Amino acid sequence: MQGINRRTLVCLQHVPFEGPGVIADWSRQRGHRLIPVNLFAQKELPAPTELDVLVVMGGPMGVDDESAYSWLKAEKRLIADCIHAGKQVIGVCLGAQLIAQVLGARVYRHRHAEIGWFPIGLTDRARAHPLMAGLPAEILAFHWHNDTFDLPHGALHLAHSAACERQAFLYDGRVLGLQCHLEITPQGLWDLISHDADSLQPGPFVQTADQMLAIGADGFAQIHRTLFDLLDRL
Image 1 (cartoon, rainbow, N blue to C red):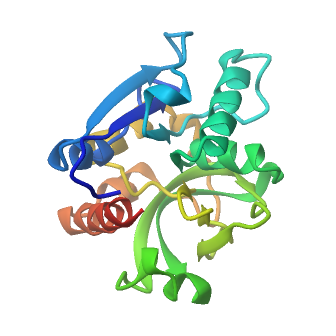
Image 2 (image 1 turned 45 degrees about the vertical axis):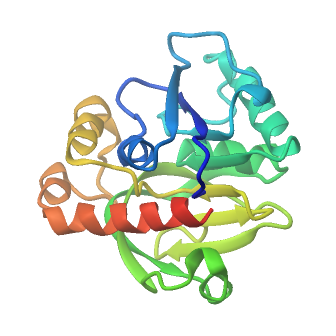
């Protein structure tokens, strides 16, 4: 995603407590412009012609909760239109699930919730792809999800974890889905714990708030380096 020209990123945010995190830092450092669109407060969506990159963030709702969140239908249309128009699209957690559904894949409740810091590993095919070249074969990533998705037809499976087989995928070399949260900041972690504490039900892949907060600065730094590398190469 590097280039001389300043690029416009539109970031779709579903709830106030799940923002772009260090994606905003990356955009600013690279000289791009990031425009937040708060779907929970704003009905008007941009046209694909108004952006270079569409970023779709996470949220506690599901991809099929259109009766409760009427903007989901328009959001899915925008994602589909951006993909069709050849734009770069990046989805995080719910965002990745929405992209997967738009591409025809099934999205469904996973047998395990995955909440906390758990390692993800690159697939063999991912390690051979230029997007992932030189990245660690395994990274301790942050997770907060109950749902998962099938791999969209034609997509490259990039990463997996013990709890969730499909952690990341790449479609057409420009559409990136990340089930895990590489963008999370210490403040973002606090916000998730504060606003979605009901999700912290005991399970084999659910950490306590204290366990999640015990991660040191190096843990955040590693996922941020990985995300910056991915965005630079996309």
